[in-house]
Length: 55
Image 1 (cartoon, rainbow, N blue to C red):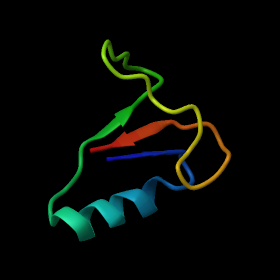
Image 2: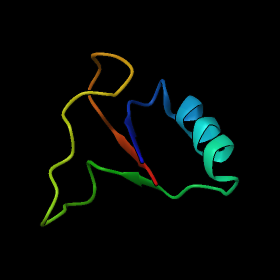
Image 3: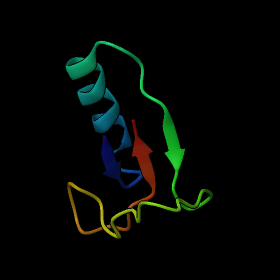
């Protein structure tokens, strides 16, 4: 699972496919709310605001 900004989305998709040999689901975390999990505020790869969950 990766939480990334728009700029790093393609890189996260590539990494997911390399690791799991399957296409990921991509969730816009600004449009979905989670009851048991609070997404990180920042991208895993930079200081930009996190936007997408790649699972």
